[in-house]
Picture 1 (spheres, rainbow, N blue to C red):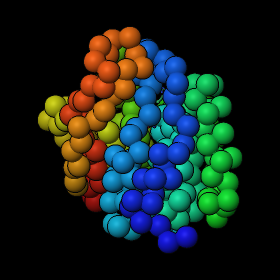
Picture 2: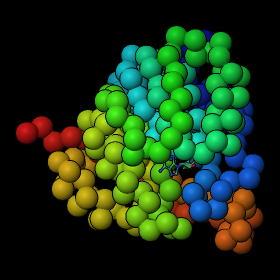
Picture 3: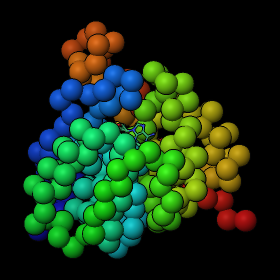
Length: 208
Ligand code: SAH
């Protein structure tokens, strides 16, 4: 099947999402249109097809599965929550035929224990709203793991992120902004759908 950005978004929208996300881990599934936009951009920049990628804090697997659909060679799904892994397995099973040319490997555990090097990392880490600096551990791991990182954070963190990246010899290469819909799945979200400004920050290792 010839993949387009909109067909990718449609397929990703059919994946099962979190139904009872865990409050403390800030679990939510990235909106399929947003995931497709990020992945399509990465694909057009030749950073997905035939590449090995890691989806850190993979949740229900939307980024890793999206990479597989766009021709990635191998995808690692790193996730510490057993319930998420169960849904992810179901999603991988559902997509089995469409992603048969992509090797997939689920790493059940904390991202800090992931030790494999890959071409690119995709991640939508906890934003650190509930656990202060939860996103830093993800970024530090991402900097160790790949020379190219697609990472979602609150847009307002931009200054901190650029500085933090610079300290790890990474530079901001691009940025895509979104009004990120958070469905009312967590007790501290009062409105039915609240939108927060989130950006996909693209960091690239500075060549020494
Ligand atoms: N990537 C998915 C899920 C985002 S929510 C998506 O975009 O839809 C963040 C995910 O990170 C949750 O599934 C949570 O369980 C997981 N997580 C949080 N801290 C983690 C850690 N230290 N190690 C591994 N996974 C973690």
